[in-house]
Image (cartoon, rainbow, N blue to C red; front, side, top):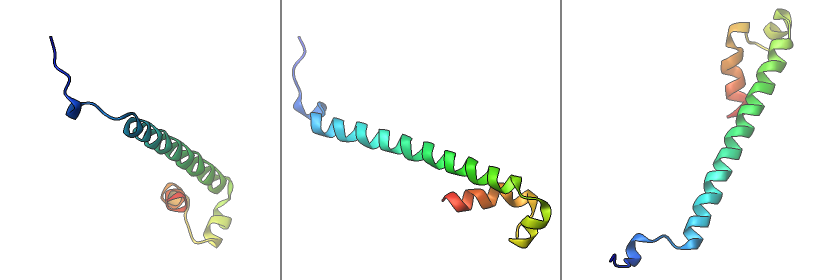
Length: 70
């Protein structure tokens, strides 16, 4: 028969906090990816002259979009 050891159990409140933290992290990452994709798509729609006017080249779009989101 096994013995109950309270040091190995996790209180319900800590477990709920861990679940909420994990879910919040997943939501924040999903929102960040969505914002990145929107920013990159908007920059890809600009022509080369417009991109030059704002100081970036077409091959920098992914880096600039990542900076805008972070």
